[in-house]
Length: 281
Image (cartoon, rainbow, N blue to C red; front, side, top):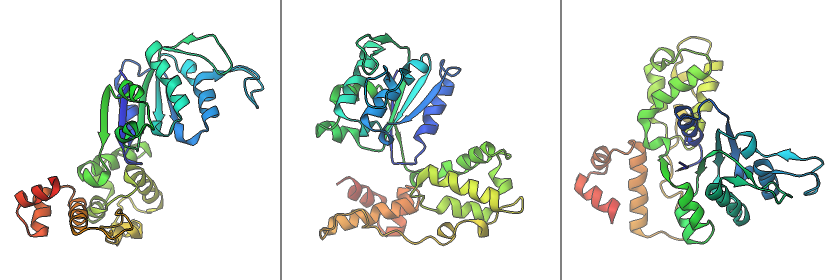
């Protein structure tokens, strides 16, 4: 079945895609990630579907596409929401017919491929606005997965630290590698860059810290001394209404306490029931 992973940039969508791949019966076959937003439409179609010699300017020889090369495995299509309408039509045919037609060819080729797609866009909104094909959306969204931002799942931070330590060739033991003060700073930081930012920080301090134990003094200044986020940063430039500012502030407080409604209500000085009403109005 196809999988659609949605969430902010850097939330670890490719990590989840790789986990799904490794746990599947295709885990011993190729896993091929493709960033759809980083390629032009022509290059993207050529990379995935392949092309015949002379089919477009620069096509000096024929080339097999990744759908064929990775047959039996999994293709991870990141930033699927950035694709063009014509590409969406071609991808829909792959999902419906299980076949591809290389650029410049009229002969379809059968492929056995699993597709996992990801996006940082709200595809339902794009579907309603006509920017993304409805039929393709439903074909991709067989198994939907939403990745919350890291600030909403702070309990995952120690596990992710262990994962990145192990990937860097170290023992996966955050409690042994970091002091309690450093871990507290890492868990309380708001992580605007999400999992990708955490990965970079762990790699940086692992290399720079001279001792086995990493104290908070080795953490970047933005983590040691975080600047409070402006809770109206994401609001329109027009003067916001009082309700809009209040809701933005409530959401900012929720971010600071890791999504705990009880703790947010305590800080705001209101009952949890009042907080719930304000969040759902």
